[in-house]
Image 1 (cartoon, rainbow, N blue to C red):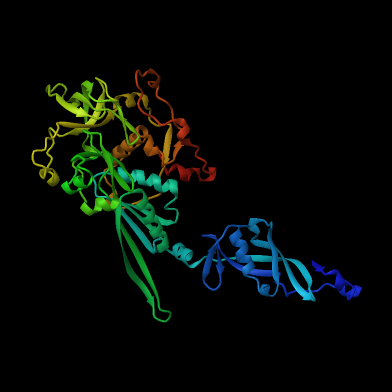
Image 2 (cartoon, rainbow, N blue to C red):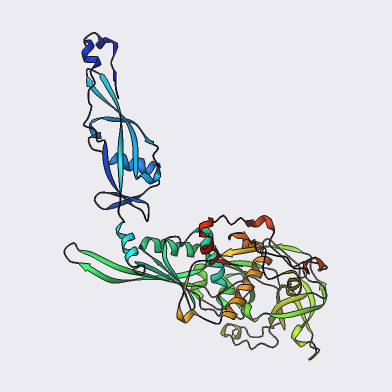
Length: 490
């Protein structure tokens, strides 16, 4: 299509034949071949650059226009896609160009260019296709603790944010998880993500794989070792004197209440709290005095509030004097402990609570020995226990479920399955009891859930549960249903 735009002063100088005769502005390309990688949806920009672009996107339109020759001789006025079937492997672009031809006369031309896609995998995709184990970067996540609860939560954060979408393989190891990537940049991006959600320190190494002396190209395998702090939520910690001094004489016995890229610490006897950032922690690198696996169940015999309820870090707390006894002592002895607790707003006589038994524990800790004359309480309560109510309420399944990463399991990591299931069950209970933990993860409706017949017969306060409005619909395609079922954990 040709359109001539002439000033009126020039119209008289042309004969009718000249104004009517079409003129080709440029030798326009009507057919162009482009290389497309079907695996990563990238297009080859010669000689070796691959550009990622979706169909009918601005990036793809820019790429298509740049593939045309002789456009520098005219002015491009407009470019747009003409719809084609996606499976046709054809892309059509309508172009409108202008050019000044004679004494200010402007000639405008519109034409359509057809791009034919040739499927050809890019170098990285072909390498992965040939050998999935041929990775370029690996990230080794490790936490030196006796449980995997941190990795259960980290797994949900990774799924929520799609942080491991570019991983070609994920492998569960004895004390962590290994992630393998086809590009170093993907590994670096993943390490940055973990650093935003957990207190970590990392180092990187590289190993020479091959060297082409003619082109002077080097191929390396990059390994990122990422260590997560062993401090976990609900751990009891004895702060080193230097750390305590830097935190305004907090503690020294404190409870870890939250772990992100900083560690939230709380003094249960003064209701003071503070945050320890990643750099501060790794400067001293202390460990927990007791971990959540050592929690003991107590029954509250008597309780008296000694201070009004206050708001500490978004949580309601009240100091109280409590009289408690270990549940395991029933029928054996009449040992009773008089302690101070920060759970006065939650507990009532007859309630159960989980805490650390410092009376019967052998606390062999170097930091604790530095505090001469420190009076250690017989017990420190951590949270209210709903175990009895939960057993009455729950059936075999919960009304919600979680997704999981498709991980291979290393031979050394095939631990006691009963222990792993117990830790995962405790993780699910933590999600029910702590709404703040659920803010950053996705929970889905469980269609197989059937409420227990005893659920309607429970009296008094119910055990914490996940509100239905927090659950997401599982919108997976039906064709992949079998595959998805294997990646769901209830």
